[in-house]
Length: 330
Image 1 (cartoon, rainbow, N blue to C red):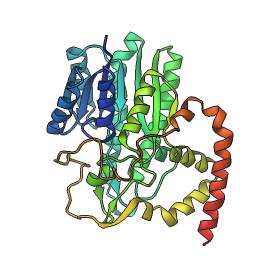
Image 2: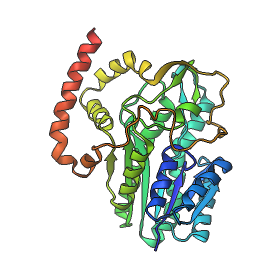
Image 3: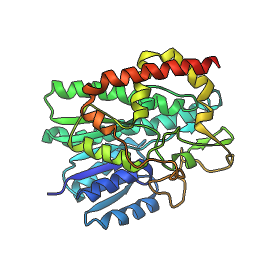
Image 4: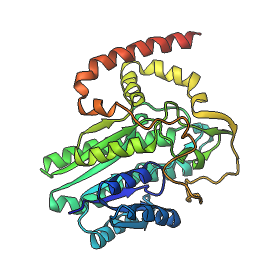
């Protein structure tokens, strides 16, 4: 029998690539996202794999809408086996240029969206005592960067939520697994449609990975649960470097964190952003960085056999911190 999978943020970016990965492997997929037209296009692509695909226009910031979507999946596709929380929204700007309303909305989508999705999944998974929930996180859930305080704060909050929930599931002896998949910079439309107050186009900090790399890690985590899966060497380095020398990283990002996230191309100050409303257009999984993005990474190996590599990575991080300190003195 096919597994039934729900994916939030499935209209574009990592969510879109993840939906394709599950469908390619024979899973029936429910796609949740805000833009109905984009969802219909994604659904048509998935049905070519011979699976059932159900598009449900949903704003994950609306808890009732997410619960209604889960109810519909159960009625039309069957019992939910896997729930994947991907949806996010952000603004590229320093904190003094942000509004309280932008913080509320970005947090409601990126953090509360995962809370709402998880609660909707647990409504059905707890009574059945089975299921898999995958939370898409980021290296920025461990090491914040300038210009992305909304996103980083939300990703940090997700970690706290999952840790509390994991202990509660253990206490109640509920066999529902929680896997956090922490990603590096990914080539998605986020950098074209996110609200941007910097006057220059945003970019993922290289090295950049294709969304299919993230999708394969998410698929693996759904059926081979781990507490965490770190994808890409930049994720490993960011997390470990922050544990070793957070103050040094603060100063390094003060010097290089702005330029690393911005191109030299001017951005359109009147361009629509997707914070409050979806941006129309034929967006898919990929952004505009195909020429720079990598299609593979060996670091998924480290997530499965991480202990054997801790010492080697720690040495590498220390060496990198030394070089970073030298650059700051230049």
